Amino acid sequence: MSRYSAVVVVPCLLMFSCIAVGAEATATRGTQGHGRVSMQGAIIDTACAIDAGSRDQTIELATIPVSRIVHDGQGPVRPFSIRLINCVLTSVTLGKPDWRHFQMTFDGVPDGNNFRLDGAARGVALQITDTLGNQAYPGTPLPVGDLQEGHMTLSYMMRLVGNHPLLQVGQYRTTVRFRLDYH
Image (cartoon, rainbow, N blue to C red; front, side):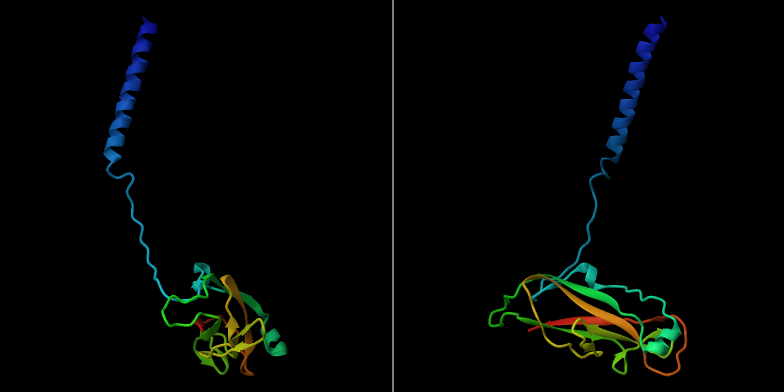
């Protein structure tokens, strides 16, 4: 009798658990398989797209002893890059010439020929140069560069430079925007 009871009880338990799972699946069927994707973008007539990882960057500069700025007049170089993707040299706009060159412009609050820093640190500014040593002046385009089909990585360097004989230690920050023009 105990063998018969076990055989009857196990199928009954399995039957009730299947019903419970089926009921749960029916109850959640209305919410499963649904979702939402939000996206945005633009279709523009341009030579290259800017890689998403290059568009908005936060770059940390190393902690620098004030003695280094006093002694050397500048801090260590911190390289950074802007990656261009899907570069096509043929313009699709009728009558517009094909692209051959680009010009990079860095823009921010000027501090002489450099970019102003905000925060408690004083007596220093941010300097940006390209790999050829051309200095980026706020709002002034760098020399023309040649475009290449496909992907390109534009490499630059930044560093702190002394701009006043009286240095004050402290935190600093700045925002520098960049713009690419194609010719």
